[in-house]
Image 1 (cartoon, rainbow, N blue to C red):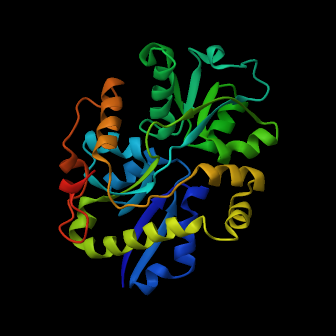
Image 2: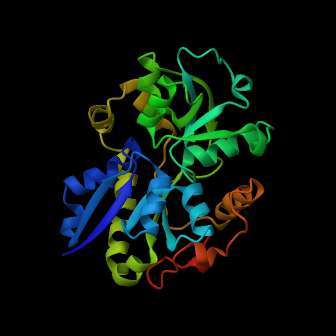
Length: 296
């Protein structure tokens, strides 16, 4: 039995993966899926894809597209979550900052450069009419725990993270949310290294087919809220609000319009120096229904 090492954030979005592993759906397809949690997020995963420490990853769409455009030898395979991500913009609860205008020119804690917390800060302030090059300062903290430490040590002022996963820290009085930012595209996509694609394309296709189906079935589970609450320590009313706005991908195909929109935004914000052809961004499947030329 061949194995695939797959990375993803330790968040509720990826529960379908864990349930599929627990129920031996991949094992029954003669594939061993080894899951690795990445609290550091997309930036940490793109680094490990580059270094061959991961075969596949579930990443923020803008983060993996930016890194592939910068030379990451990986390919987009399939959408995972087709709904946008709602980012919360947080400050320490004791902070004097009450609104976004108060944090202009302040220091943003980010997981690492190239992470979602980094890229979406650019997107957010640009949408607010700020100048990202002048109005953004960053401190790399490695993830949520690093941001908590930076807040306590007064080395960062602002932090962007998924709204609902951060809600417990708001409820406990540690963080305060001053604004939201919704991604202007589907939030999570699946990618793989070219090396793994060359050696295990059939296994990857099996994994993608299984997780596409499991994502679609997840919201139909009568115990979905209880499972999320138990595993991620979230309040049930928050989980329901999150489920109401979350849609897992219903198709294995990317929208070429969406991919160009992401690259146009990254180019405008000077996060990438040039756009790349979609054929270099996405893997060109030569069988089943996955053909780049049929992207819609």
